[in-house]
Image 1 (tube, helix red, strand yellow):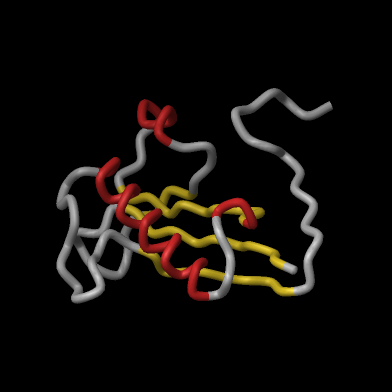
Image 2 (cartoon, rainbow, N blue to C red):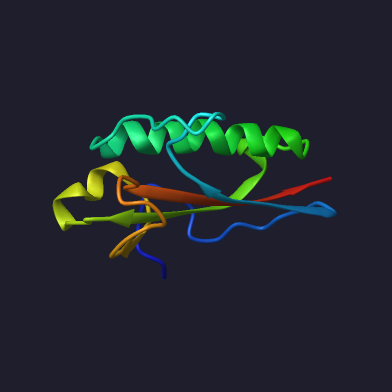
Length: 107
């Protein structure tokens, strides 16, 4: 039996196109940083950027099977902000606190 969690342990996709959105961080389209030093703010911008990427492929968050968060400076007391994540030492730029990947399936 799987342990209770605020997310689904198993997702089954029914569609013919896989959509992968990766490398989403807290930057605007022109490269301007968003929410320096603010993990929640960076997550929010990375999610907005992910939504744009999904939309470009004809998908929405309703089609997402998996979100993966890579987070720097992770401590267990931050667990309330995430369903699952991977703690990393660093991302590609020093001010980046989170990077997001999404996997979706659409018909």
